[in-house]
Length: 299
Image (cartoon, rainbow, N blue to C red; front, side, top):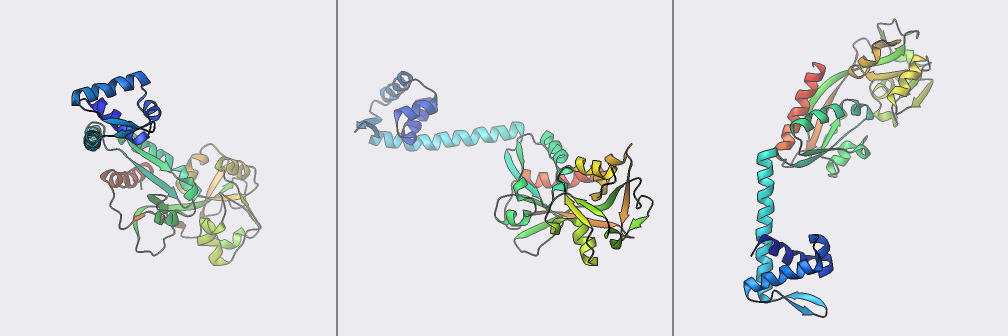
């Protein structure tokens, strides 16, 4: 018997009808009937019997169906192993962050990883943004990029990088020549943020809230380019990671101002599940993430 005969028997049993088996195997009815007769001829016995317009396995058919599963599963397993040997590992990694600003650097890193591991599918789960640790524990994502840590024995944290936030203002703004700004300077300002809630906004959480300072006006604006244009027009100020704002400072009427005398710095971590056993490609991705970010930003 041939592999096509085993696939035929498996399809008829599992699809439950000749019609569905025809669709799955992309055969005509005459071709399917011919293959079935060919298999029965080689065995010297019937594989199926008709009962109430349905095909039912004979004793010989049941035996053959069991063997078909074992052989076809082994073939699939072997094919995968060979592909891994030739092309590398296959798999999927679902990733999310706690704030949308992280998506400025993440795509370029994912693209670089895809060049090295083309068979690993990387999925950015934006629906988990703002709640990556919760979604990590719910198995919605595999990796969370976070700076706000919660104490939970089910979560393991790996340090990724540290960056500094700065205020972006127009060159005509009163802050443009300041060495740094203090919390009280925000009282009469229009603060542009990427998104709500405020608890996820770094400048609010780490700088303004502790000082009990609220800006005169706060506007959430998801598009960074639109925010930059508003700042150029002297219509507000915005906090951004220093590495993210550098491209906008070139040939542009913008200034980056330090937040606080010592600067506003924040560590970012990779969060994964503590007890889960991950495949090798997963650990490769984490190492790649750490190395590539340090390489790109010269950290």
